[in-house]
View 1 (cartoon, helix red, strand yellow):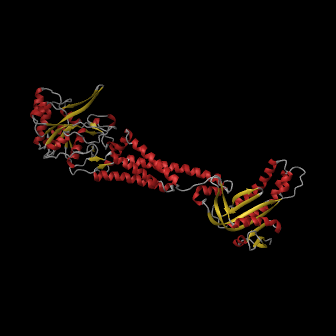
View 2 (cartoon, rainbow, N blue to C red):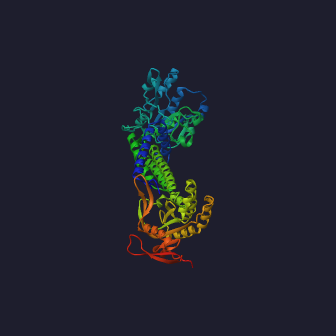
Amino acid sequence: MARQWISYGFSARQRRSGIVLVAMVALLVGLLSLTAVMRDLDGRSFDYLSTIDPVLPEQPGVTLIAIDEPSMAAIGQQWPWRRSQHAELIEQLRSAGAKAIAFDIVFAEPTDPEEDQALANAMGPDIILAADESLIERPYGSTLVRTEPIPALIKAGARSGVASLSMDGDGVLRNMPHYSDGFMATLFATTGGKPEPEHDGPRRIQYFGPAGSYPTISYYQALDPESYLPPDYLKDQIVMVGFALQANAEVAAGGIDAFETAYTLRSRQLTPGIEVQATIYDNLRTGLSISTAPGWVSLLLIAFSAALALAVSRPKSPAIKALLLTTAVLAMIGGCWLLLQYGRLWIGPVAPTTTLVLAVVAVATRDFASEQRQRRAVTNAFGQYLAPEMVKKIANDPGLLNLGGESRELTILFSDIRGFTSIAEAMQEDPQGLTRVINAILTPLSNIILRHGGTIDKYMGDCVMAFWNAPLDDPDHALHAVEAAQDMLAAMEQVNLDVQAMLPAGSDVPLIRMGIGINTGTCVVGNMGSDRRFDYSVLGDAVNLASRLEGQCKEQAVDLLVGQNTAQAIASIRFRKVADIQVKGRTAKEATYTLSEA
């Protein structure tokens, strides 16, 4: 019957192809992880996870003095302001008890000598000034330019530190400054902090909130703390002076000295530079900055995800597979968050989760295509031998099949047309017509067999062999076989009418009759044949007996003979005994039965 092997479940070949498939996915994701797109996605995942319930310092380490719109209006000067104005601010902050004062402003160019001298006179070891370092790209090469405050300020006792910050490729500021004399590192050392130990790789900034999370007072308020601030508000505080112009802090507007941070993803707001610097200071002070795992860890996780994808892909149920995939992805993301939260280590989840999802989808796609091929194979293999509803049932659940060979109890039917030789002689000059006649006989008989759940094994000329209880289970196989035989015999009247209409004019051909033999017994059923060609068929003594019973119908003058096992298996139909016959190859005689006329 089936002209090709039909395989179900996870074969060794499927497992090998699955391993190759997920390995290709892992290699692809590994290569993609080197691209800017994946780095940007990894950065976005950091932004999201690092801002979920972040660890916060007990107290902010810096109070911000904001050069903002209210201060611009109160002072009534265009920027840059007179440097004596900043000198006055320093004196007021010291009088208010400030511990250290940092200016996130680069005083790089000389102005009016008196103004410069006024600011220099206010300098001291408690003052930290911003320097700048920038890389200038030119056609003939790159030049690193460092811009320091004017020398008079440094000679007067102030210290400087590089305030330059480097954004990732997507424009988000995530990494701690790498300068040993960075702006906040200098401020941290000035206020008694211990230098941070050397790290193998870059560290990421732990942000503690969106813009406005640090205590902030306006520049003009700091000029008169007694009027605008509570008593001792600035006592022993570290303060930082810099821009915080909210009109320029919208993401869409770009802005001056304002940055996209991890919280921009949620708030859609830029964070002023002084608040970013304050966050860096608290990362140094509390040790909350986040180390990044080396590249080989990500590659190892990609390999692990590929292996996990094979396990996730094993269940047949799409719902279970989707549940396992969702659980695995959430577990990976959750694990990355836990490492970040409690281990201060960042391992990006994008590459491993992408590997997992793509690998599972790839295997699922392969399995779906394989399943469709199997459905087509089932339909092609059994469509001509089983009823359509049985073919559909097998296609929907191939596990119902066992094509490898097994022993089971079957009921076998053989039918043969009596008188077909006369038809063949009458139509010997018309072979095409003879073919139409045999088809007209076998088609209605085959349809009856299929309607009663039988499997057509083969056609042998005008003979049909069929069996019940394979490939699908049929507890009432004996009853269904006999009911099919009854309907086949009842259909012979119409078959004869159709055949007579197809015979040549003037043909004197008698009506055909049919003999049917049915027997029940244990048989071997499965794919049988050679490596190149095989049938789904049955073997066994019960098959031979069914064939002998069909051959005895003419001798016993009956249209239907059934074996003793079949008659005993059916309680709802009455049989009468016909004879005990001697079957070739058996020593004992076999009792035969036919339908009772009463």
